Image: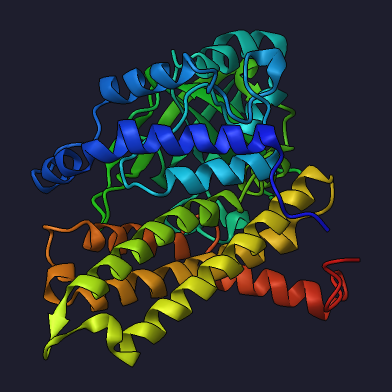
Length: 389
């Protein structure tokens, strides 16, 4: 059993690590200043500039197939890159990507939506969550009724990532109430200028989701993505596309936070000695280090299963659940080690505190992950101790 990285994998990982240190970390203080002033931490033009700089070195479309101009990296390699990006809170992401379900578009739709999105000329968002349908995606109430050759969409979506910036949306609506999720939900590609609008949702973090409102939005039949009635299958494919990537980024955040805690513990003195000599501090540091390593292997195992073509949903749920819980415990310990300074906005700890809290909610709450894990075990879909076959 070999846990080492190949030469190529190490080179790719190290390039991203260097990029983060040279291009992103120096922006942190300005990002904090802007966010405190209610401004975006990274402007759209700055993000594009950074993405193009990365593209010059070949980093474009990390998981986008090579036939579309991407790198086509493995799930394991992508997880390693996400961990490196997680070392900073500067909201950077590599360009050249598109939602996985857009690859189900027909040739005409690929020309209008997929290819421009990969090139960064268009921005999309995925809209299934509603005020009354969060974890229970089957309970969506947004409707699309046929009117001649068109569909008329009515409803509201909420907590939509990228919904304020997107110029088109992949929206899921009920087209056959009797069938519901079993053949009665359809996905539509809807341009903003077709009539939907977005409203900003203020949150405790810097993530700014949106509510999307559809009032008699008329779209032609050509805007159906995939097949009529098969939208729920597409939705589940989107949701399960890479839950392991969320805790992967948390690995980097926790490593950076723990490093801050170690440095502070070695330099902060109380009662004539560094607090690093206090057992209470030592145990918090030790527990955090162990949990980061455990999370790393849960994430890499889930990613390995994806690359191996296995059903990775159970492994991804375990990584997502453990990552959300432990990342929050670790940032809380780091804040505690820093005392009052950790609670201020002079340091980025409180910002990470707010950001990491979201990990336990979006793309499947802790409770949903526990439900999935328990159900798999109780129904015999997964055997205890079967990770190695």
